[in-house]
Length: 416
Length: 119
Image (tube, rainbow over all chains, first blue to last red; front, side, top):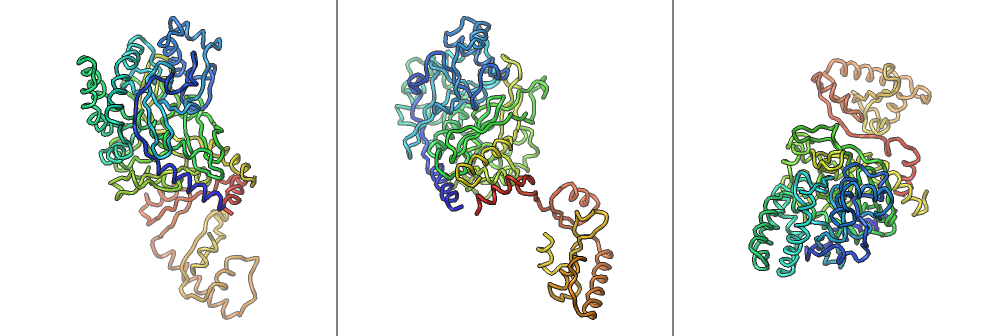
């Protein structure tokens, strides 16, 4: 239908025209005025305490103590069960968060502004690897790190970014693709490029030498530092493509550990959900699939803009890390995803595929027609609260989300 | 699929007993006698009236084609289930796999919606 083709062309144009810049780091209460006391934003489509998975509950308990809303983890759990906290998806507030993805008032948020359209997107700063809150960790070590991020790292990054006028992220990501990154499970190249741009500004704006050393050490030791920046880029690029009448392009994919949800441009902010699937992957020593929690995180926003598993051909090293086969098979993932999108991104190209652009603009019609659902690279959390990451793998988006979306989309166009 | 292969000039047999109609056997005709005669051969129920000599000639072409098919190693285009292609390759046959599945996984309602959204 002509209306669909024109709408999809416009949706793709908006995504590709985006100009994301990391401009600041500010407290969530300042960035998100509607984020009140006892309000907890989470990854994925809407979910209440009673349906939350183990790591999500663990993170909720920990963040309640961090914010001073509960005296300890047990008190936090009791309050949550009694309905003392209000839960909303990050997406409803212009934010995203990896894995459990909790966002609350006191946390410093990365601010990515899409200069082409004027919208902003937000994400908390990446905590590092292993036992961290985004994987359900909630002990004193986890809370202590969050406090340091709030008091030292966040304000330091904010001063540095304001001093240099921000960091342009589109060319940085383009460079990262040539360095073996796919911006979901492999971010070491982009993290290094960011540190190279931030370090002089951090040095010039540091208030204490000890804080400067701690910040540089933390960023330099975190291979996944750029993940959260890339996620905010995804949100910043897709938000202008929301709500285009007649467009079948996906504007969000997200999981809360219980449900997988997608949003489609032509059906606005309505979620189409289905039970999440279990990732298949490789586990850290001492852990196995029996310990794993099903898929979670807003990080599928990265695949929504053509990166992550969609750009696997740029990152053959990640294929082994997520247990997806041989490095020589990396390009097959990207080629497969090219069958379910409306176009490619000429700004983000993959050298190993003769600089073909990453497949961009997932079309629900193509997903349903072919039965080929998006592949997502992901970390794997322990199913129990308080443990943390146990592995990494790949997971498929549930077909039912796209089928339900297609029916609603057809109804909206008056053809069903 | 049957008509696509026939239009390309191949003799197509859709009556393989063992597959109960689930498989097609397509072989190149020895002489290209034009489309309608070969296509009419495919369907017992729609046999057209034609010249007896043409019938005999066509029948001989078919037999020769079948004979050549059986004498030569098989060259296979496998459409759909990749398992079949893997088994054939494992036996040393030349096989090309074409990835194909019914639109919308065979769900006629969704396939119908897709058709409407395409029109």
